[in-house]
Length: 403
Image 1 (tube, one colour):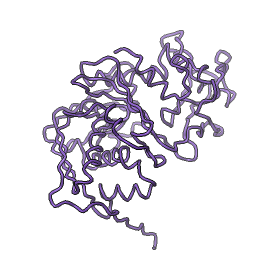
Image 2: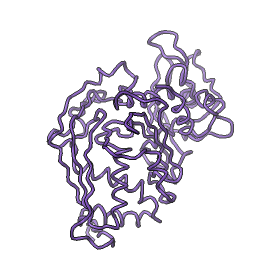
Image 3: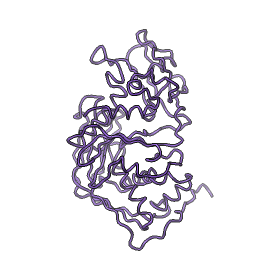
Image 4: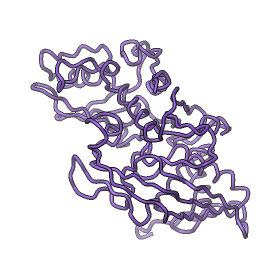
């Protein structure tokens, strides 16, 4: 074959209709957008990169089509028998490099206007939306309406494509960090996300394909909010508090600039692995695991002070490199009111026990899944049912909060 990549033809689907079925939604971008342009960063500043949207087409067609493909897999493709079958059906619907699919996409977005927003204006370091934006130095606020239209060249495929579009509007977005609610979308007439997920019949079958079926969970905040951005801030801050907030994820600090000790076991386990720690920070946590890996990996651990370990990372095992978070946090409009939403994607076959800690001198295997009664030894979990399933415990915590 002389190194050539074989072309893959779309698999058989229903015959293309001469007229096609039109699905159309007028959408609004209701939260700040994290990047979204064709270039990942505007400069090479490692700690505070500048993120820019695409000024000509804020809703880039290639990005929207990619989102729709993802949410088609999460709603329908995940029920197929295998990866080859999924790819064949996906190519038939959405196309590939060899041939177009039966879904045509058009976006009318001339009414959108953009405003640059400094991340420093969002609050203190490590709080609220600034925590969710991570290292970005800026975000973008898009105002106005865009119309997304899909022409489906088969009546029989209309339901699959309609569900992908609805799932994208309810759970996805545009730009980066959409699982943390950035670039979230909304449109009139969307269903309650809990009812939408409950209406997806059948189980997810394809390993490593995130799904909104067979074990996925959706919860809403008890209270409502005046705006989508307020609900977004609440959702992201809930995760921050659970993972490292004072009084929940960590103890009170002795000084304003010296945070208290974490109530999670990861830092002490790294101290044990490296046998490196000051006398006042000798490892005391009884659990020797890395349960916060359930939120996604890699995770960077940064230690401050003399005699502490060098920075370390928790990464997935088996040379996977990265595990996208199964947790989605964002605002959603239900009954004309804004709620904060937390949704958990099911990922069949996702390894929960195999991870690696990358250390300065040597990498070490790590465990992320808790055993037996270990959850009772981790205060953020013990306070919310001692569930060893960290994401399930977070959803319980999320619904306990008041807006």
